[in-house]
Image (tube, rainbow over all chains, first blue to last red; front, side):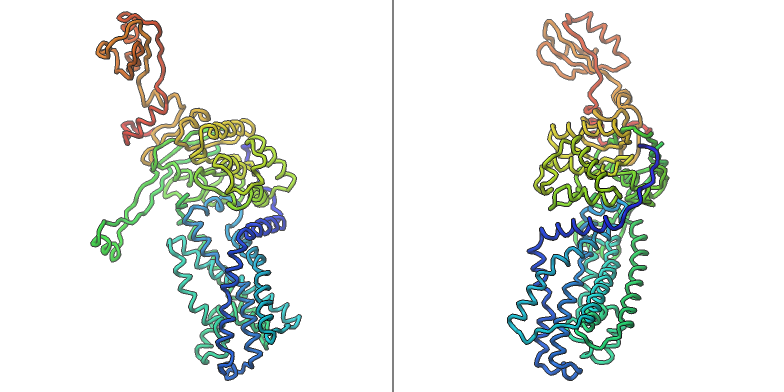
Length: 270
Length: 330
């Protein structure tokens, strides 16, 4: 018992399966709350109402049908790229729940990632119900995207989720230095709303603002996957390259900050 | 040695703010900090299979030391080796061999049955499903857990939850157990069951246990050796019995007399601890024990006489109440 033992090689797939199934069971306990979250993500649909008939879309080269598809696609993308890791990480850090995670041979962020994926799976029927209700009330909005657009759109949405998860993960590292890191995330909400294309297609922005937006990671989190999903003309290679570069940058930042932060960790509340 | 700490120290930097508006403004403009030593130059070594009690009042540095031994926090100075590893590196090989159970914290998923948390832990530590089932069954038997395992954690009593926490923490069969107040808040029966389990687990697996507890019953039932820490400094490391010799150099002499006597009658024989009818208990300095007992037997008509060490709870409780230690560190 006391002789040093080598840990058994851990099979990754069983771990992934157990993490996902357990987190899914956990999320089902909160299904009512998740339904409300899904309902609260209707901003793109509201923006669709605001933009429809305003004429601003046509001025930017968007036909009414394109505008509708863009905001419907943005709604779906937004639903499946919701990230809340900073909330749970800050709470775990302050309440001392991070300590038991740190004593296990698994990076705590894998648990958080599994929780996000499980939450998205739980969200699927609610999003489907919301879309069904929308099409029932307004049948003219119904549109079926091409199979290839769905494939690349789903891929782009998953990549956008990973980018958002890593970006928020980087901000979450501030928890090691501050007890109120969440304030930083709130600071990023406004640029995210405007520069991601959630409230308006980037094409409607003045050229200077649009160029600025494209130099940030935000358009890759909504505008790019939404345009892919709606079947608009998009440079897929450039879009995925942008997603990969920003994700890579945030991953490196995350790992550097994690290493520095864990040295400062004081295991408060534990 | 499976645990070695050498001049281990931890200093926290804390903000220093004066009360009132002026203090608040000063604190806002020019924040001042001061260094607070939580642990200062603590050294000890623990052999494989030992069960060691870690005693000290609140804020003595027990939990900080445990956090350094598990690698949760980095020491300010000194070195520490646990199962041959530097804990702060948190290597997988190290994490597979230790566990930390905190009585006031939980790792079980609150809204799901404990079995779900066990499944996650088993997968994290790379146990195959049959192996995990076998270990869960074995530990559940030892802990007398049955249908509680399929009930949501939030529906379990504190005692049941603690037993499930222990099961989750021991599923990977760690070689070293760090237990921080594992019986905190439990009733007497639940405390006894947890103690019995820990003793049984130590016997069966040979695991090393470092245990902190406010309940002396835990320490006296489980640990032959204790580390006593106070104000961040270790001032006793040795057998539990030796602690009373060092901190309480007196004995309790209980007499049953044929005729009741007033307290004044015992002047010069020792300090009267209690007096009830013909029963008296005297606190006699160890150096004068033989002489005092001989004089008492000569002077009074004694039916029965018993000499004993003062209870360990009394020694340590008194020490902590005094809030300071007159003795030099170990």
